[in-house]
Length: 220
Image: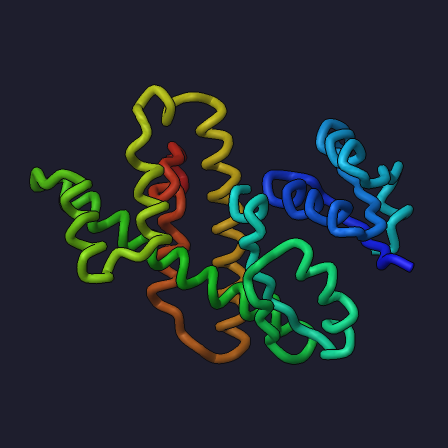
């Protein structure tokens, strides 16, 4: 008997993750408020759910490069491991007890946002003093100071002005900004409860509109 899998949320990451399941032999049921991605996955062998209750439960996703940070009983992880292995080629990171996966993600996302802030300020200075962005990146990549993640972030600042000003781009960036602000707010709350000061994280949390090119006078 095949393992049954339910998947809720078929957005830019959810859909490509779920798309790997039915071809891997899992009995897959999917749900999303948008019907188009549901129809696409049904065509690939999944079953559509009319409501989330019927279940009981971007590019890296499409290429099976998702990193899973898992917290909970090891026995539960072993039960879910075939599903996880079907959707990623990256080794699973087991974080320990229940809740540690979410805590670990907040710590990792804090690193991400601080890296972006470092890349942004370095880029802003380089531009202001007449250094081409590609020269900055070449130097930073050569000595390892600019990571793959930072390079990907900097690419977003190279798009033409007409793209940056388009409604679609602005909506996408605002969405990413709000997710980042949410993650940083949770990280700062977790730090407060743990009695740890995160002064750099606190400053970065107030700069997300600038980092995401979002025109918002209240956040810039």
